[in-house]
Each structure stands twice: as structure tokens, then as C-alpha cells.
Length: 216
Image 1 (cartoon, rainbow, N blue to C red):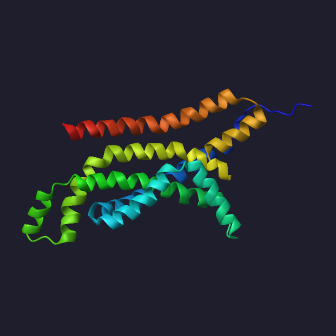
Image 2 (cartoon, rainbow, N blue to C red):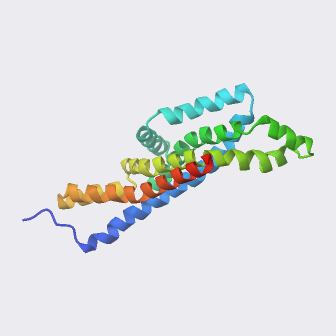
Image 3 (cartoon, rainbow, N blue to C red):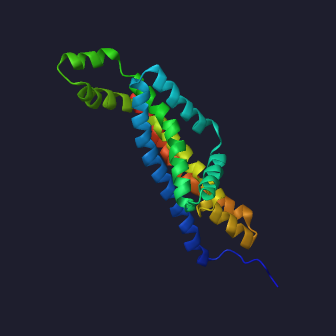
């Protein structure tokens, strides 16, 4: 009796589900991680040393502890507390916080790159503090961080594969199940790698294009 079955067109829907789940959780992590990173990046750029130290310590933990450990610990802890969350929710929360930790430094560097002379000039023209932030700090500072933002986004797309360890049915976990059933690891993993390449490489080229355009 043959325990393994080859790949077929019937597996297309299963693979597509994994692809869409990967894209979905990556978009959520990048969008919310960017928004939180922008907020806390501004806080770090404008706050005093005490707040900076406290916030920096939290961010260092998120950046230093491997993502796979954060996913397992969070999912296990929430379950042990009696409030188990679906794998997607747990994965989206941790991946968003992980993304935020890197985005904070990206945006802080952008705010720090805005010359103080421009801020003072805006205030001398009668702009309020928040008008200066809106019309000077954000437009000028954010232009310089776009290539770095692209780089973090690419890393998040690839790191989303780690969410499979808590049971989320993204592309890598889909591939693992197909490998177990078909015993064709080379073909399946090549297809997975090709998918990540088709997403990451165009974004990487676009980031380099923007960087060259900004430097010239």
C-alpha cells in the first residue's frame, strides 16, 4: 500500500491558502508595526533620557530575543493563563511588535536627521510645535528612511515563516504538510523559495531605485 501521493492540481488551492495567509499576516505586521514605529520613533526622538532609556530597554528585548522564542513563549503563556488565542492572532501580535522594534529606530533616525535650523525657522514663521512636526519633521525625515523601511519590510515577509511553529497555516507550514504527504521536499521547497524571491526581489530593486533617486 502506497502511503505517499504525488503533487497534483488539487493541491493548488491548499498552496494558495498558504500563500495568501503569508501575505495577509505580513501586511498586517508591516502596517501596524510601521504605525507604532512612527509613534514611538517620534517619542524617542523628542523625549528625555529617562523615557528614552525605558523605551529603549523594551525595544532591545524585542530585537534581541529570537522571534521564534517570542512566538512560542507568548502563545504558551496566553494559553496557560486560560485565554488561548488563534495562531493567527498570536502570530500577528508578536510579528507586529517585532516589526515595531526595528521600525522605531528607522523612524527615530529620520526625525534626528531633520536639521534643528529648519525647525527653528518654522517656529519663527509662526508655526506651532505640531504644525512644525506635520509640515517639516515628518515630510523631510520620512524621505530619508524609506530605503530602510523597505529593508525591514522584506525581513518581516521572510520572518513570517516562523509563525508556523505555533500552528498558523502559512506557506512554510503548508509546504511541510505537502512534503510529509508527497515526499518531494526539493520540488516543494524550491517553489517556496521562488515565491519569497518573487516578492522580495522586486521590492529590493524598488528600494535601491528610491535610494539612488534620493542621493542624486
